[in-house]
Image (cartoon, rainbow, N blue to C red; front, side):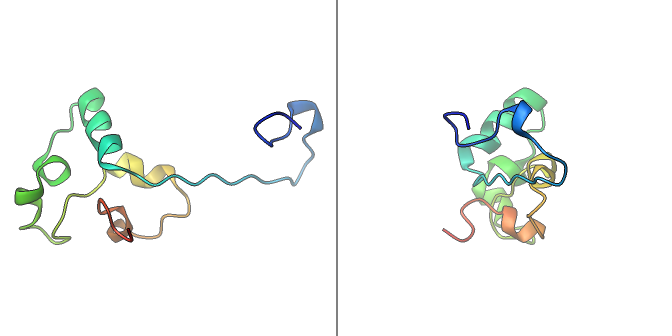
Length: 82
């Protein structure tokens, strides 16, 4: 085991699985917008986003798709569930 409580490559076996969880924060959204150029108001402007379907800013699609356990765009709303 390494210091991050994971397995070193020489200790991996067929069938082993791993999981990863990350809460997408407002900072994550701003950082992705800055490097991707996707600066749509639905991601960055709370007032503008409030007139849309989710009524709040939402994460970029790339951020949503990175988590295989995310089961709907509604969960991507910034601050949802917190």
